[in-house]
Image (cartoon, rainbow, N blue to C red):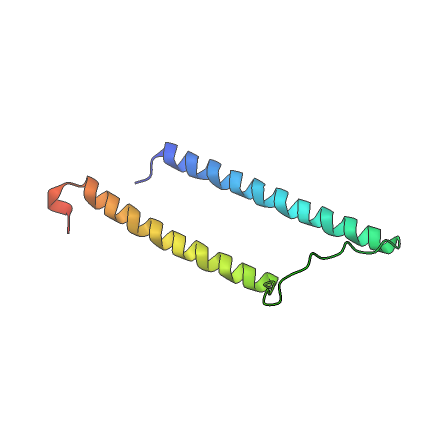
Length: 96
């Protein structure tokens, strides 16, 4: 059973993460709009930094897929940890 304090902490953490994600998305949109406005006004886009020949930039889809894979592994690791922790806290008769 999850206590009210733990549930409140989880909600606070979730809200904090959502706020951070919203701020990041707003910054990306502002950057994209600023570049588009500068290009519409006739300014050339900023030069790209040189990349070594084998360097390949991942697509947004690849970044998203990798992020979900990492989140999935992290969730599985946390689940295993919490299961082991709860067994350890349960006493000798609950250990397997």
